[in-house]
Image 1 (cartoon, rainbow, N blue to C red):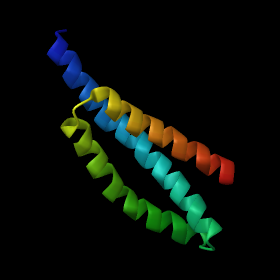
Image 2 (cartoon, rainbow, N blue to C red):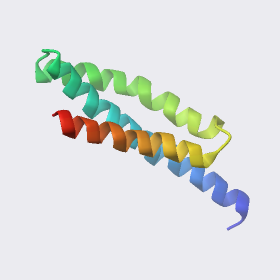
Image 3 (tube, one colour):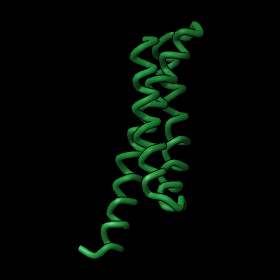
Image 4 (cartoon, rainbow, N blue to C red):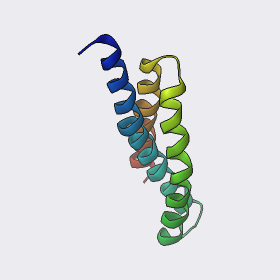
Length: 91
């Protein structure tokens, strides 16, 4: 594989896997925070799942627009792990 092919594969993987991890972290943290604010689980889950569509698309697109693939991985995968950890801590 050439250098440019690896770059494209890294961007696609970051967009799909990192975007998924970031959206998962957003979803888990959002549900925990909504329930802490007094929302029922079903209402919290439904509303955060609807917002998750609006989170994944910009994360996916940003993975291709950002200058640094390393920064994309750090923000998306790292942010997703951080939000999931916070949700586990508070939940």
